[in-house]
Length: 317
Image 1 (tube, rainbow, N blue to C red):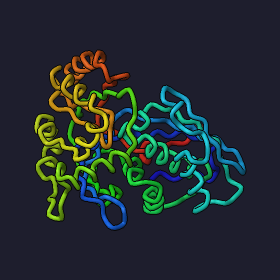
Image 2 (cartoon, one colour):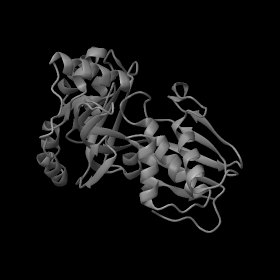
Image 3 (cartoon, one colour):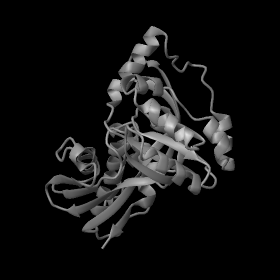
Image 4 (cartoon, rainbow, N blue to C red):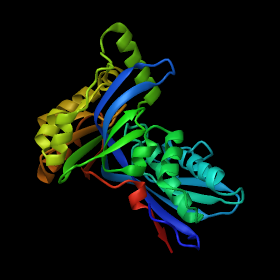
């Protein structure tokens, strides 16, 4: 990770990407209350940008952008929690910052927008205050904030295990073309997992077992840049639960596939639907069709893989 100069910058700007789960296999809820996961994370070139300005003694936040109304500008904000954690672990009580978030990642959309903000704040706070934690220390702090935060630091494409915080970077050749269809309302991640548990208890969903194997075929397809094979291997164990809670998403998935997408699935816990396309032209065609879908409010085209907060963070004079 790049190190700050001896004089801490008075302001920094850091971006962090949204994520898609190319695979999301979920085990039954464990005795600790958590679900063990096996997932392939993929960062896309749609992200939030944080501007941190020195403000001694106080950490505050203002969110702007199309999703700002859905974000709390108080101490519960993940960016504030991340900056506070940096100060408490590596800094001193007198440090502070005002954080401005340009919010482009849908909120409660299954794309780790809050985790992206936390990752950007971790990197931005260390730059702003001239601190020098190791990458390992920063990743440990990220994992304590949330399961998706370490990947938001890393970016690119990675195999995730445990709760998603144990990462193995993967090669992704070329560029994958995506269309994102943002739904009219959000879904709570705990609610989706709760519905998944209900389906497991009823025998209508099969959880990942201890014998789950490494997704070698997908990893090889990513390394070749083989979009058609990647499309055939996309899977999300939470999708049936999300569709139970939001049946209208089924129509969105059908509309995208009918318009020419190689594949479509619910992203993470939803409700954003993502569609892998053969190329830029196909992505534009799919996006045009989805703009008229009844449960879609916003359509975006983007590509992956994208860098994480560690790679994008830089000091600004």
